[in-house]
Image 1 (cartoon, rainbow, N blue to C red):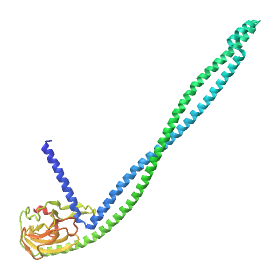
Image 2 (image 1 turned 90 degrees about the vertical axis):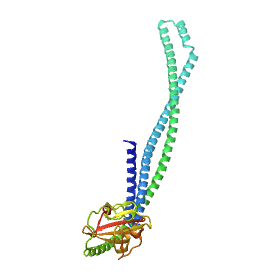
Image 3 (image 1 turned 90 degrees about the horizontal axis):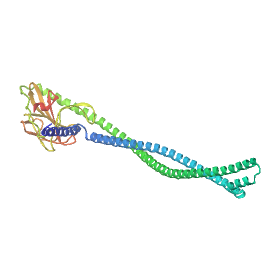
Image 4 (image 1 turned 45 degrees about the vertical axis):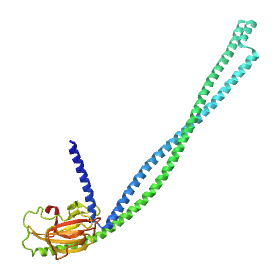
Length: 390
């Protein structure tokens, strides 16, 4: 993709995003201030609750992991302490065996001292014996004594080596136990901290649940009230429509031809929310946005879309200060334009105004979150898209 094309695409997406934000904000203008506040409070409560629930879930996962580690560490500690006890028992037994072997060697040494060196004893036996059988028997006895001493010494050496091994094992196991105890203590502390955090967060969630419920109840009450207000406004609209149709039945002539560019743009500002069907962002019903919203700072002059007669102006809780301008017949149908949310009027009922003449000034009266013009075009009392005529 060429660099310029990429830049253009990025700019288009940026403009679309900005346009979407403006439209979303403009859609709020079809809501009462109380309901906008209530909806914002409810949305904030839902957001805080979701965040608190997410935090609690994360803490609970950490707590579960800490409890598992704690259980594992306690098991390791118990095993290490059991291994230490076994090693200490083996060392004690090894020391007892070494002591026994040394005692045997002591006894052998005493016997050698009493009877002399076994090798010398064998020479004495040979010299003093008269019979060959006596010599053989006595020599066997001497050999047995020497073998016994050698075996005892060998066992002593082996036991001494084994004792050294067991003592080294005791040292290692003692160090392992100390490490496991320290780790187990740390997991206990972490678990306790997480348990406290989880308890605090559960309390916060409970509070936010109550807050959300309160906000939802307030929003529901405001919505019910707004529904009644809107119903009254619709009745008043129906009355004006009857007035329009009564005038239309008496009108003659009018404009016939191409309607593109027929109407003068009432304000120079850009479109913030177009005509059309949509889901209302607060009331959540599928409804018609029956006009085009234009950007118009407070006090902006609003101009007659075409020459005509002001047939009505009144205040509505929903649309604020309204002005109806009858433009006569267009292709056989009566065309009436409506200016909503005016700050004040310039023209009044019965006045005939020329195309482009100022009829009022932009405001934020009625259900509005900021100064703008909600401009409606009606054919035979039914709303149509104003931009088709500009």
